[in-house]
Image (tube, rainbow, N blue to C red):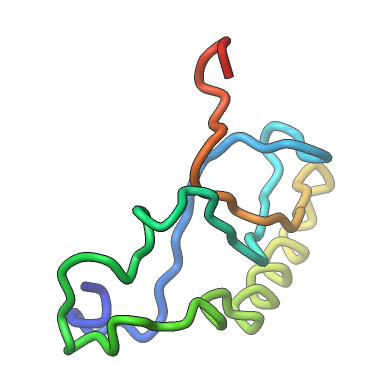
Length: 102
């Protein structure tokens, strides 16, 4: 949809929990992503519109190293010592730790 509106780049922001060396308020730049949902959640399944490319597109290159560098430089120029920039892998699918059972 963004491409249809003329966007050449698309930046997604999100507030999410984390595991590991991440504190509340840290900025995390996603440098990789993985899905543990299985075949039923494959983005290539379902309706397809050829205006946006082939139905079986690769996921490589969806995270821009150029934009990551710009983001990192922007954080560094704020000169706010409490502002930590971490890198991480975004995982879709469970577990999401939204209940005591998980």
